[in-house]
Length: 352
Image 1 (cartoon, rainbow, N blue to C red):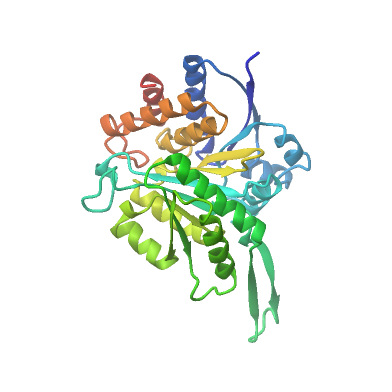
Image 2: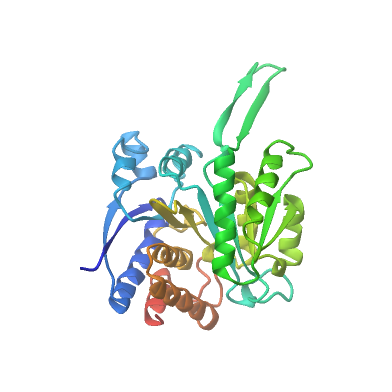
């Protein structure tokens, strides 16, 4: 009997449910065409629920989500809720509780028309950022001293364990080997200033690198990484970095690949439940207008299916997205694509 993939769906806030609906449309078509079975269960976690109940996540949420094969997330962020409440209460809680210790962000240009960098082509911009997703500054450790006085001090601690660092670095080397493109892993850090955290990262990086003689290992400061992502993005294959630097450089990556409308990401637990999402946010000003670009959510669905072992369907979805971007869209921006949200979803289905 064939496996039935159990997928938890969190539409979330703003335009999140709209883009997720298009992803589910593609999922249904892909399942029919590539002969796999799935079932979904929707959850209403997000701003509206919080405003009605005062509850960000019910106590049962993590326990229930552990029973799924994957989570498909639209967006979190509501204009009526103070920033940080939903992000910490939902996104960070799920990442930490489900031990989704890898944030995986492909940076891939589909069409040179949408790249802000002069003379760069899809062959130049095709790399992946592997971001540690459960430690670092995002661990939430720190304190105030003399708060509210002229002598106030705010401490924010970057928490890095050897186990956490090593499993992230090892994932990056394995990913580069499987990707089999340039077979290069670049550690992005700041060893000249962050002399404790990145001393650990650098030592572990080169120790692990010895086990992967077929993969080239190198290092770049985070500021240099940003510079080269703009000037020579073709140098990169897989970049591995900590939580904070990863958060920053992946947004730069989104811009050089064409914008938030095409950028997808995965919060990965290789041995457990992973969560996939478009990274552009909830875009509340476009809610209900049928103008938001759903391709990031659809690409996130392809990542989800790849993680579940449905590689043929995942490749087909990616290829369809590329075809739609190159042959149909006149822009990747909301309201400027030349098609509505639902029409773009239909185009992806048609070109599977």
